[in-house]
Image 1: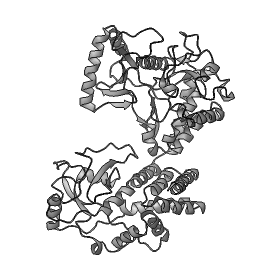
Image 2: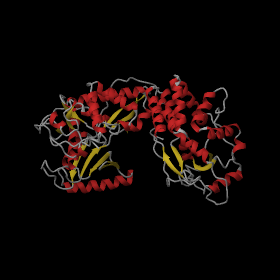
Image 3: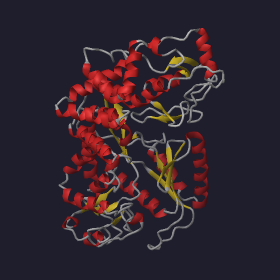
Image 4: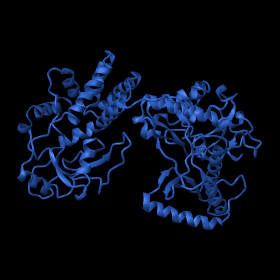
Length: 560
């Protein structure tokens, strides 16, 4: 079993190393990972890549997907009696969402999958070979017989269901999939497939039951259609993204500065005056107001986003409220960091408007278990890079890299903290708190890098010496870099960095720290993203030795 997993993993790495144009790499990885037998699919892909057939391999898979999404034919339609039976069988509700139909979103009897056109084309034997490796011989033999003569293999009951029109569109676009329970032919779990930027559809329950709700012995949906769609839906989305990128007009990859937006909708002068007066009000009163606003936000926008020990709640008036539980010193540090970045740079960040604590905060620097705190800040536009990376073209990614280089250079020009004689500290001149170090327990401040390195593993390694100390975000990963679409006057569409968020662990650190922290969770992100981050920091120096020491430290469970 381990050998099988290693062989699949090796092929996935080979796909990345081949450096195919985006999104061809993710498309081939999806082919391998979603195959009925990933080992068989991996060997097929490896063989063709080793013969230099990467482009034709992608073209074949592209052709296979479009044989359904674009060129597929409707299966044999149910007659009136069969339609009534299907409605009865499915309980008069949408099979996917569990919802009843509405005037604007009616229920329809629709095919689960079109009949693929061209899967049995003798002129493209590589297509049949690729499908055989994807489905495996028995499954592919069934599909081949179905494609040749749908009426002889199935009835309309097998490939039709009752579904809301909006759910049918989402299903056909690969935005949702149904995963069948291994122990049942009718029990499924609905999953939203996060490839692009589409929002999840509303459902009444995540466990559809594709059986005969009428108990009238009406023929059920054939699980092979639902299962095949589940294996193809990620590729369906990636093919659609590829088509959009190929038609997209490209513009300059040079740096584009973005102006900060005034999210509150009134002038900066009035906003500043209002919050100056507001902060003079008693902390207890402001805390009560924020607790009320948080409940209003939950009702309007849903439950808050959970970030470790903190929650971030969207509020009315273009605001966000960050709630720190038992870590008020992080709230103080983030409030100060945002103000420093706002004052000294042009980096797009949320504007910190207020920070308030549940009780009077102790000025004792040894008291770091502080009370609950709220940080009020403005909303910033955009999507986290991890979520939008698939829709970014190569020129978009290069533009974002250029912007990040500019922003890091600006951060490094922020003057050192005047409140502290210690070079390595948080933005207030106090102890550092970083989830990389001792579970974010307070450490320092430190007189020099040698002292700071003593809290790290391999503290005396030469790679942990001799660095400049700079202002550092300290968590510059794909969750905290936001990007948004910009439509220009000539009609071109580009993506740019729209904000950098989550500054709670910011402070003054050795210059390599920003890079190694950005790469600490590299295993979560794509090779494409990690390559971009490496390219960004190569502008400032070669931190490969520092990275190697950190990798050894992480491998020995340091920072876990």
